[in-house]
Image 1 (spheres, rainbow, N blue to C red):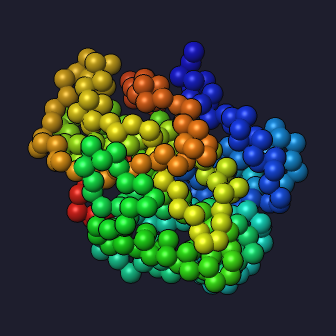
Image 2 (image 1 turned 90 degrees about the vertical axis):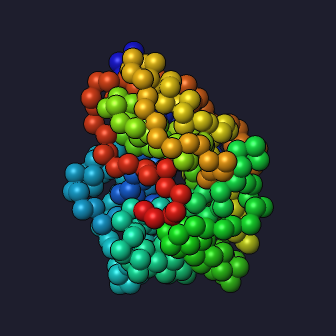
Image 3 (image 1 turned 45 degrees about the horizontal axis):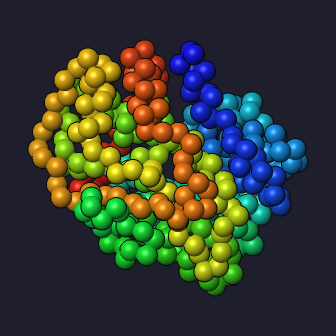
Amino acid sequence: MDIVKQYQKLLEPSEALIADVGKLDGDLIILGVGGKMGPDLAKLARRAIDISGKKIKVIGVARFSEPSLKNELEQNGIETISADLLEEDQLAKLPDAPNVLYLAGMKFGTTGKESLTWAMNTYLPGRVAEKYRHSRIVAFSTGNVYPFTTVSSGGPTEQQPVEPIGEYAQSCLGRERMFQYFSAKNQTPVLIFRLNYANDVSYGVLLDIARSVKERKAINLRMGHVNIIWQGDANEMAIRSLHHCSSPAKILNIAGPEILSVRSLAEQFGMLFNERPRFTDEEQGTALLSNAGESFRLFGKPNVRTSDMISLIAQWVNEGRKTSQKPTHFQEREGKF
């Protein structure tokens, strides 16, 4: 099968997602739709809703610094609104919607722009939580709020005390605390969606590793183990999480079911590229991991296997197809992005 067709097939909604969106009671608004996950998430929601026969809108909000993305979303049946969420008057004018997916945030470039980072990641969530106090909200967060844990531990569950490293992770914990506060204050149903390493053909840890092997660049092994999940599976879980929001806010880890060795992943790409991977440093005894067992109980395990992701991404890289050119910096252990 053609590589593009293989990829598109993996973006189709599952029967479980179609059933769940059929139970939604009103429009869906996605705040921060312009990021790396937002466009595919919006299109996935639109397809699933159309198949379900439900007559509800999908509305995507972003600054849309790239007009082509706005046009692409509209061509796929998604209503778009250009807005800077940090501008109070623009936030206030957004339409009400009973279902909110909150994807806005700042990670890369935070070093040197700490005040903007805190404004985006902590101040803004409080304003959004107040604006949409009568909605249910799935708020994207990150596994970076957890401390490093040993590989043998299986990764932290949602009950693990948080211990964010660096200002980015601290500001993300601030985001969570704002949503938790307003959830309790206003009885707003909220779910904190702690995502760890979503992967697509154009972005992700697997692409970083694949590129390094293909380009004969050394891979730093200090962060020697990772969880990974196909972005399409993470997007499905985000939409389906609307049915699991609660007050007090529910916390849910989203990650792949396996703890994977970076060295082993590189060696698998090496076999596919006929290249010998190069490494620097050694694996540390701890890594940034998550135990996503609760999400598997709610939604089942991800549909796309690690081996399928490796095969698809290797072929994508071999054919020189378009990628985001934005590294994940997954090797970072000091929390500076």
